[in-house]
Each structure stands twice: as structure tokens, then as C-alpha cells.
Length: 245
Image 1 (tube, helix red, strand yellow):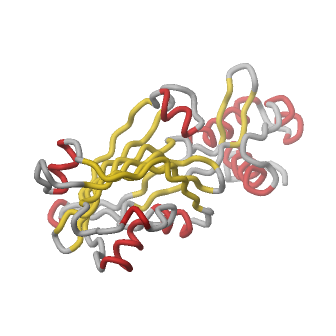
Image 2 (cartoon, one colour):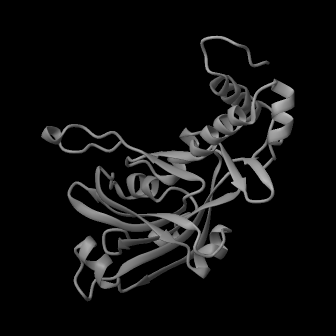
């Protein structure tokens, strides 16, 4: 592949060539050729190289390490904001999901979870804490609260699989709507260790309450690695409200 004179700007041609290299030959975290190598190999100016590389950095396909060079970014996994479970979500994008259960017990829910689930002070709840991975790399730390009374025996089920599937198949509770908030947070020491990121690395936090026929069945907070996860949503006009897919 070469960069030629013509109607397409050279930096755009070089971006396409580099993108093909990133997608076809280089693995995540591999270095790309240096600025000087690219200048010599394609007979273009440094400004052209900087423009092409800069675009791929801003698009999240490459990342720079000061004093070290430019490297291939791991592909971000796009989340469609919908009611699919983590397991379905990852499979649909061609990733192999896996889950480690860090804790599962029956206890009294804290006030925010209790309010979200519509529980009284005396009502019991299940707390399920899990580490979710995609292709063997940690992706999210998740803490779920579920009401205990409608879900007897839940903690004996295989909680490494989709809780949504368990609710549907074993309890006839199909989650059909949800309310979700999203914000950004720096990783605290615990989550930094679990997700294998530096302390204070950016995380995307999702807090979601899911309902089955109007009854709140799960209140979950998930901390996702922002370097590996991005969100895609479709917003309709205000007339129709927002619809997240």
C-alpha cells in the first residue's frame, strides 16, 4: 500500500493504511512504526504522519505513551444500552464472557438498594458480588441486590451464568424494563486490583434497577473499565422520550 498524489488527502490515505495494519497485523499493545519510519516508508511529511496518527489516537484505535511511542489500543467493547445480560452482551459482540463469584449471601439491604427494590427494613435481600471478564481480561466489578422472598434458593443456582436467565427460567420473572444512571469514577484500590488497572484509572459506573412486570427484581451497580468499554445509545426526539437500545 502506498500514499499517492490525488484528490484524497495524504493524511487520510495514511490513516487507512495504518488502520489496516492495526486491524490486520498488529496485536493490542504492539508498537506502531516510529514517526521517522513512517515518513521514510510512505514518502510523506512529518505533519502528514502526525495528522494520521493523531486521528487514530482520538478515535481510540491507538494510544501514546510519553517517551515510549504509539501503540495499538485494545478494541473497546460497545454497549448497546438494553436489557441484555452481561453474558449475552459479550457473546453478541464476539467475546467470550466469564464470571467469578466473589461473594453471595442473604442479608439486609442498605437503604439505597432497599428503596430501589421497594423492601421494608425487615425484608431480606440477596447480595451477589461478581467479577465479569471478556476474553479472560477483567471487564467489570458488579454488586447486585435482589429481593429474597420471591426468589427462594437463588444462591444455590450457578451464579457464574446470567442471573437474568435464571430469573426467567427458574422463577418466571422476565425482566422487561429498567432505569439506569451512568457516571465516571476513578478506581479505588480494591477495584484497581480486581480490574487490573492503576489506582484512579477511569471507570464507567452503571447503576440499574430492573423490573419484571412492574416489580423491582434487581438493583445492580457495575464498575466497567473505561479503556475497554464504551456505550452506544440512540436518542429519539423529546416527543418520544429517550429510547436506549
